[in-house]
Image (tube, rainbow, N blue to C red; front, side, top):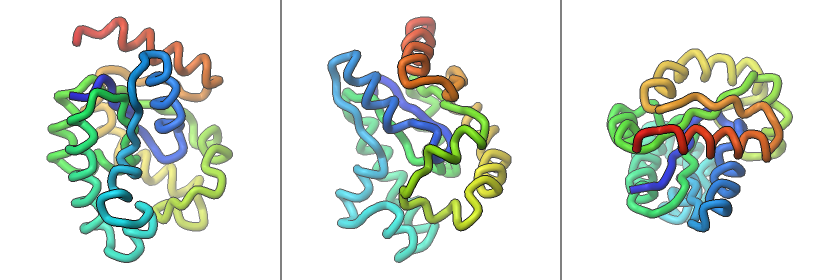
Length: 166
């Protein structure tokens, strides 16, 4: 069972914050995109382009299942919540939803390989938020405003976890 799972839109800071919280707790951090890449032999975005969304989501679910077996802080891919099975698994974990305005996310995207965002990330983020928002809420014990500094958001996460009945 993972110590903590972070969900949210692409670029919200799940991986960076998972690593930061893991450092504070003295445990490992895992990103399901990295677990997926190791399993399939190429980066998550490349696998999505080669094999399509359905195959990608199956591989992503397998990566989530693997990651949840570890004693780590787990950062998920933004779309993991589209799978009913993934939502079931996430609902059993201490899962937090990292969220902030799309305008705050856009600069964080950088040059990362995010095929589902296409050429217009802001409009894509809005559409993904509309599609996934209820699922993020369904699986999460709390919603964290991730628009602040790394230190501030880390503190919000630690405070939220400390206040949860696990």
